[in-house]
Amino acid sequence: MKIKKMVCSKAMTGFFFDDQAAIKAGAVVDGNIYKGEPMTPGFTSVRQRGEAVSVMLILEDGQIAHGDCAAVQYSGAGGRDPLFLASDFIPVIEREITPLLVGKEIGSFREMAKLVDNHIDTATGKALHTAVRYGVTQAILDAVAKANGKLMAEVIADEYGLSVSDSAVPIFSQSGDERYTNADKMILKNSDVLPHALINNVDSKLGANGEKLAEYVKWLRDRIIEVRTDDSYTPILHIDVYGTFGLAFNNDFPRIADYIVDLANIAKPFKLRIEGPVDMGERETQIDALAKVRELVEAKGSDAEIVADEWCNTYQDVADFTDKKAGHMAQIKTPDLGGINNTIEAVLYCKKNGMGAYLGGTCNETDRSAQVCVHIAMATNPDQMLAKPGMGVDEGYLIVYNEMQRIISLRK
Image: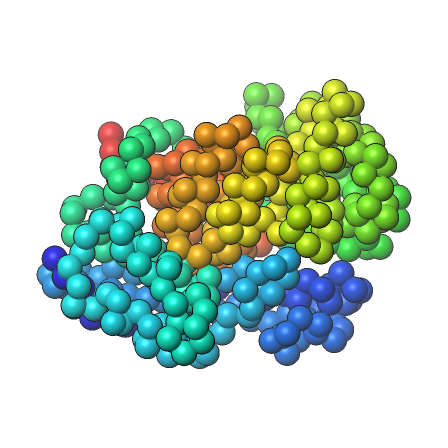
């Protein structure tokens, strides 16, 4: 079966683009906006609407396969590609992808995805934006599935020698700034991992000596015990701190490790994961820093885990962080890896080499990219998957949970 035509449409994401540099520098929250001057190239305000592009491939038999090109909330930060605006990139997609796909026979997903992921933009001489590669390869996976009468998860499993899971992958919910109200939603829904908490500012969220976050972890622990309806519900506490430990403690790794161990003790009986304790501003020093923090935490006999995020963007980054034991778990931030073939391979690399695999992404994705990522999760079986998009909990959780349950039920 051939691809007859490609159609693109502008789309909205489930959240916003935020200028992380400006936020770290002290941009002030005012309602649902940030007041301050943007610092990252391309941003016209510290927070602006999230945009995406839907790519639809019309097949010979009239079926329509589609995927969504989307970029992370903190675009342009931590070595990532720049801001992704629909009006700027639809012409790029039409110019570069149409000759690659339209009129071509649908073959294997891996071959077609590699063709797109390795394509060099004829206008710039550079790789296509990660968001473009992300969305187009989603559409390719859907096209291969539709052409062969299979689920997308089954296509992945067949091509990579895997088995589709017959049970749900643990779901990680994120709260945004509503870390108290949204934590209640997560507990009521029995989220496996929670709450993310968005600790991205020292003064307002962490505290100069970490006292504000310690207070929050204590509240969260007590709230779970109070609200849960079954004592067997023991979620993992996963908190993303955006390098603020390094800012507060001047990148003093022994002090940071001590603080993480203290937080883990407060969190008990629940397990604690800390994502991004430091941001060293550069890939190699970030690897060294997370490896050192992991070593120090383990030396203290703590079961707290460190999660890599900043500067761990590409498949090669994930492999290098894994090889150097830079953390206990890597967030595989799906839009940052470009083609979803890279996401699949990154999960498998982590699992093969003793690194926790967190199939992540961003609140700034769409319902469609989240659904495709569920199929990746069910085929590759990572340790956890992010509920996305959005920061409202309910919407992202239902999209991911419902797609998992559909796959499980259809395969029975």
